[in-house]
Each structure stands twice: as structure tokens, then as C-alpha cells.
Image (cartoon, rainbow, N blue to C red; front, side, top):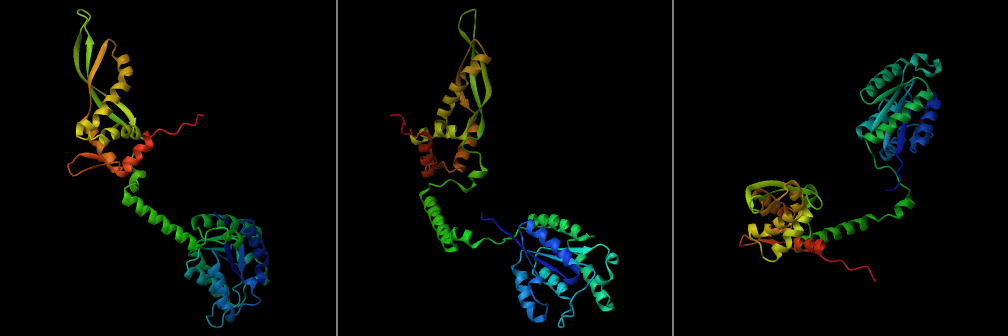
Amino acid sequence: MPEQRHQVFVSSTYVDLIEERSEVMQALLELECIPAGMELFPAANDSQWDWIKKVIDESDYYIVIIGGRYGSVSKESGLSYTEMEYRYAVETEKPVIGFLVEDASQLPHKLVEQQPGKVKKLEAFRDLVKNRLCKFYNSPVDLGAKVSRSLTQLRKQYPRSGWVRADVLAALPSPDELLRLKSENEDLRRRLESYGLEGPKSREFLASGSDTYQIDFVFTRSEKFEATGGFRSKGSQWEKIGMSWDDIFALLGPSILRNNNSYWNAAQPLASRIEYLSGAVLTEAYPNSKFSNFRISSDCIDTILLQLRALKLIELDDDKSWQLTAYGDNYLVSLLGVPKSTNP
């Protein structure tokens, strides 16, 4: 992912907030942002308004700083350019944040609005900004620190596309190339689906591969009778054993491939494998015993067959017998195929 830099439009009156803007610009540069604002223009007037809107449109975030002055007023709208910029940013749904001086009465007299009409408009503008995300500052340094923290959070909450160096983009695939590759990928997917060689789209939500399934099985236990040396049946007993879905399919797949595809025939290799795997454990648990008639519970067989069907490894044919799908056949080969030896 190319490194992105976000453009931040900084709006404020100018002459009375030079030091504050300087702190904000420094904070933005330290965040590797691109500052933009009214100081780019030699003078604010209605003829430049379209250009100002264009710069706001191209910016990722918008910051307004309100001190003790209302600023230059547009003859057409009767609003200050700072307020016009703020309203436009909100209207175009830019992520905005306002910074208001905490106590304008503490500012030097020359930095405080004196015209009654503008004083009223300034108060109305402050109230407007307070309706959205805003912070209060009490000094230029305090403002810079709050801009840094607030913009970091704003970028996390509202990610934007930002700007990337042209030479970096030149090394990336063009939009036409990306569309071509996307189309080619979709075509290959359609072919795989038509050949039945692609797994189900839901595979990531289904247990598969190395995921373990607990299998319930039953067997007959006979215990050695010391008096005669023979064995006496102790009846049927249930146990559990865990096996991965790949191991289960590797056992059932060849049986289905050989057309041993009836319900119980398909499960017989699995029962034989369980008998082999559990032998040592059962012998330790039940000394002087022998075990026979291993069978898997019908519920587990149902679950296993349905799961393998959901994974598109097996399917029912017209005779309601199980058979491997094209994808299942290919997957079975990948599990059981003998790799070429690397030894000389």
C-alpha cells in the first residue's frame, strides 16, 4: 500500500491568528499532512470563491480556528469567508473539527471584534461550530497540541483516500490493467465452477482440513474369564475419538471411488481405522479384554456425509449413491498422491 498524505484545509481569519496558524501548520507537518488554506490566496474576494471551494473539495479534512475576530465579509452572502468555508465543508460532508478560543475577553483589544454587527455574527458562528466536533484552546501552543491529538483521532475515525506520489503510482497497475486482471480472474473462477474444481464459497465458514471432529463409536468388549481361559462378553460400550476432516475424507474417499458407496459401506474404512487407532488406548483402559464389532454412530455418519457434501467433496448420484465430485476427486489426489522423491 503506497504511503498516503492527507490534505487538511485550515480555515480562519488571518491577521489576528498568525501565531496560532503557525502552530497548527507545524502540527500538520509533523503528522505528515499537507496544509492548505486562505494564505494561499493574496486576498479573499468573491471572484476567488470557486477556487477556494475547489481546494476544499480536494482536501481530506477541514479545520476551522475561531479567535476574537469575525473576518472579511462577502458582499454577496453577508457572511465571512471563514464561515462560508465552514458551511461549504459541512455541506460537502468533509470530516470537520473546530477550535475555538476559550476566553476571547483575555485577548488583546486589537484582536477582538469591535463592530457590533460582526460581534453578533461571530457569536452565531461560534454557536454553529459548537454543534459539531470542536475543542477549546487558550494559547497558540495549546492549540497546536490539540490539533495534533484531535486530527489523529479524526483520521482513524474517518479514513480518507489521501494523496500519493505520482512516481509511486506509476509503479502500480493502471486502472485498465486492474480491470483486465479482475475480468480474467472472474473468467477463471467461472471455468473452475463449470469444471467443478473450485471449493464452496462457504468453505471458510465450515469445519474442514485440519479441523477436528469428535466421532462417537461403539464396540463389543469381551473380558478374559480366568476359570476357563475363555472370554465372556461384557456388552457394548461407547467411546469418542477425534479425527481431522482431511483424515476422514482420505479414508472415505477411496471407498467411494471404488463404488463402495452405500451408507454403511462408505463408513466401513473409517470404522476399521478407529479400531486400529483406539486399540492401544482401550487395551490400557480395559486389560485382559478383547474388542470387536466396531461401528460408528449413525448420527456421526450422517453428519460426516453431509459435511463432506457441504464441502463439495461428495454428491449423490441419480441412484442416491455417494460419489466424488470433480473437486472432491482432485482434492483426494492432493491428499493421497505420492510426491516425487527428492532423494538422488
